Length: 70
Image (cartoon, rainbow, N blue to C red; front, side, top):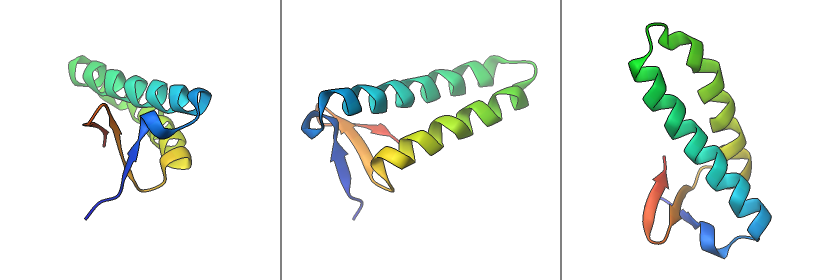
């Protein structure tokens, strides 16, 4: 069973940073799918994932009961 980190239980500043990185990653993935040069987004997405993992570890992240990462 996967451990889940609930954003609501975190300190406000850290929770904001985590949510921001998750949504930046999701947005980059969507833009990558539409891009003529999708490889340009690979490093950016990887950077977001590293920041997310530095905060959440290997846990899934939920917000208001919904899994938002991965």
